[in-house]
Amino acid sequence: MISESRFCTVLRLDAIWRPAVGKHLLALSPDDRYGRFASPLPDEAIAAYVARIDFAHDLCFATVEGDGRLSGFLHLAVHGQFAELGASVLSGQR
Image (cartoon, rainbow, N blue to C red):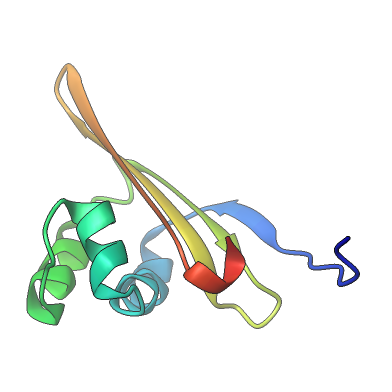
């Protein structure tokens, strides 16, 4: 039985959230980075990925904790008729 209540907010993100997305993805463990990116990306590669996210065109959603930290991030990158979906959740919030 879970006795602790946790509330978070789900938001569609815009570019103002870019730094928070970067913090979230950099907080992923090596195994979680592999699960998210199919590669154990180093910090520099994650920073480059975050810099390229087109928040105006792609769909980006997150679960935002009360302290403003992202506990989950969902990115649907649209490339013409194709799309790529990536999702991550911090281990403590699964």
